[in-house]
Length: 346
Image (cartoon, rainbow, N blue to C red; front, side, top):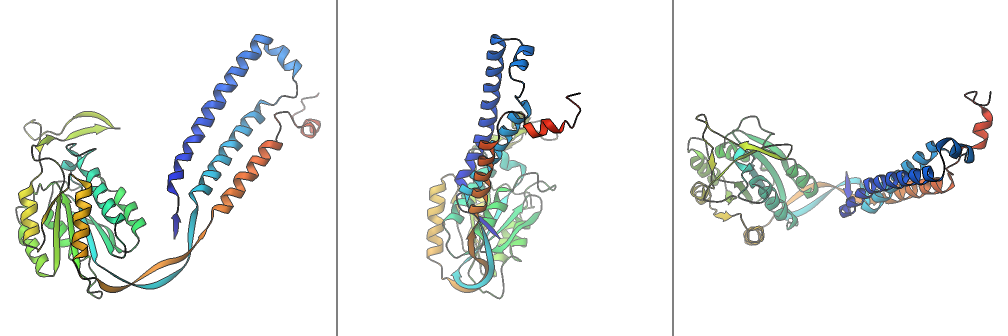
C-alpha cells in the first residue's frame, strides 16, 4: 500500500508544458535571429558541429528531471507490513445518489459534485470510524466495503459519476436494502447510514417502509438533501459543453427539484433526521455532533503500517538527469562522427 504525503506538489507538473512551450518559443526566436544574420547554408558551414537532435534531447532530459523532482516533493510512501490494531468508532455508510437528476446545477458545480464534496469533508473530520460507500440510481451498487482507509475511500468517492450505472431513475429503497449487508455483525458497532440525494424517488414509494425495517435493525438513517426546492432543468453536456436539456417523452424539458419531504420521512422512521446539504460547514458540524453523541464500540482492523519514504529515489534520478543534461553539449559528438556509421564522409 502507498501514500502520497504532499499531494499539493502535483501542481508542479504544470511546469512541464510551460518548459516545453518556452523552449519552443526560444528555439523559434533563435532560428529567426540566425536567418537575419546569414542564410541556412552559410550557418551550417559556420557551425558544422551543431546538433539539432541533441537540442531536442536536452529538452526531453529537462522535462524528465522536472517530473522526477515533482514526484520527490510529493514524497510517495510504501507500507512495509500489515498489522492489526484496535480502534473505537462508528460504522458509517454513505449512499450517494448518482441518477441523472444529480447533474442539475442548482448546487455548485452540480448536485453530484456537491454530494461528493460533503462526503469528503465529513471523512476529513473522522478519526477512527469505519466508512463504506454505495452508489445508487435505478439500482444500488457497492462502491467501497467498510474500511478504515480514508484515502482509498476518497479515491473511490471521486470516481462516482452518473454514467457508472446503466439503470437510471432513483430507487432509494435499493440503496437501503443493500446498506443492510454492509455492516459487520461481528463488530457490533453503532451503525449510521447517510443518504445524500436530491430526494427524487422512483421506487414506488416503498422507501419509507424499507427504512423502517433498516431502523429496526439498529441502523440510524440520516438524509442530506442537495439542490434547490424551486426546480431546475437537467443539462446535457458533451465534453463539458452545454448541448441541451433533458426532455421527457413528450419533448418537454424535465424540471427536477429537491424533495425534502421524502428525505425527512425516511430519516424519521429510522431514528434520524434530515440535514440541509447546501452549507458544507453546517453539514460537517451536524455530523460531528451526531458522532460525538454516539457510543464508540471497539473493533479490530488490519492496516498497513511503517510507511517508508521513497522520495530519495526520485530525487536521485532527477539530479542524475540534470547532471547528464549539464554535461551533454549541443554539439555533435566527435567519436561518433569518426565512426562514420552512415558513410557521411565518403
